[in-house]
Image (cartoon, rainbow, N blue to C red; front, side, top):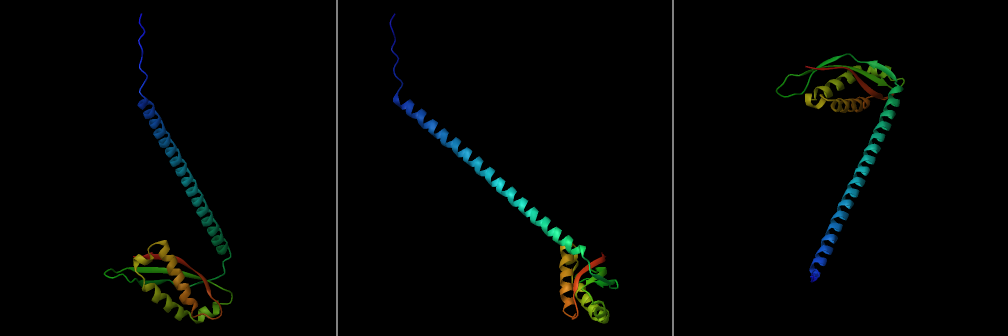
Length: 168
């Protein structure tokens, strides 16, 4: 029998295979690099979130420690005030307790009308939208403490507590 000669494959096929393999290797390496970069990003995000949560927990602990040492308390009469809400009649009934530094009770009792005027002026200047959420109430407390402490000389108001806060 006669042997048939097979022709050697053209040289172009080998080059094409090498190019295809090189392209596939680059694509695979790029994919692996992308996955590794994404995982590293996720780990960094997790670390940041964990750090933020730790800071929040530390701040909450500090705040709890500050509230554990409550000073002298003084209750003011409840107020019913109009809120500054244009086109709408909204009323606020509010009960307030002051936490005072030592020895301030006598001065607060003496200046009670002045302090009540400050309370009425500031609270009635607020709209419902400004005080409806927890953040608004905290800002109101800070503003009141600052304004009230301006007229006190023998001590200061440490904190204000709203014991009643009803808006109608």
